[in-house]
Image (cartoon, rainbow, N blue to C red; front, side, top):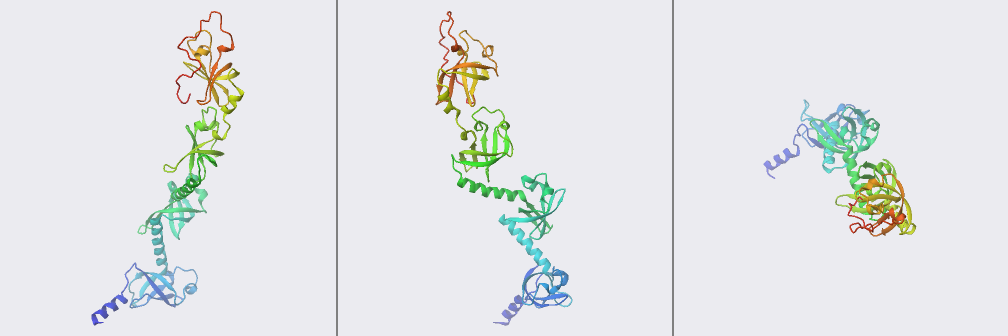
Length: 374
């Protein structure tokens, strides 16, 4: 080794650290008011008692030979020693860990300490963090005070060491947890199977049910065999229900559910209890230009064609029947495949002597072209 190489080696081996560096050291001696640390520099480093960050005596935690990380406060003091801080090293290391947790998207626990007008103050990894009210889990929206004193899962959204800023989100942690549960849920769900859940939302077109990891939709048409005008006539928020899975779409994370398919199909009873020729009672649910719809049993409506209202010519359905009126009718046709039933009012009596027979344009044994809802 040449003299130049030796000098370079000596310079690298005993390089003076810079302010703000975090370096490894070995405890050499523990005194009542300071700790001497070998950090591989030309001179030993010194940690004063106030920079230890300990409670009680200086030597209550450190012993000679302990390996520690220290923060360089001053590269050289008046005595030629490097001034170090154990407290700052731990704090800076924690900020580094927090930044790593943010990058990884790790869910970690935080202790809620207090509430302010913007959200909640939390302790996370030993650091002071802020949880904005907009990032609180949906279940606690509007009731932040109830979270004070609790430990909650959060994800770190922002780490800014210079501004001493740490922003966390409970909602993001909740979303990740739901995503994991949703994946597990789709792996075990099967079309045609039944699951239990809780009604989590109600809209004009149906009800959403939380089945543990995801919400499934019961369309209003799948609530009951009866005609349903309002979802709240059948279900209420928070109600526990057992439903049937009728469709799964993992790519769109959509689950279609049914309540009515777990109930007995009224058409199974209809064929047995109301064969063609039966006299039944029905209530008018709505009138159209081509006739009236009558509910003849729960979940089943039949069509009373305008040509079957009277032996006389009828111009308007409303001239004979009104919505809500209850009348007796005769079953004249059942189409189980298309789930349609044809009714007659006039065939409960014999035709008058003056009756000249049906006009060709009337086909009372068939449904007219109607929309799916009808």
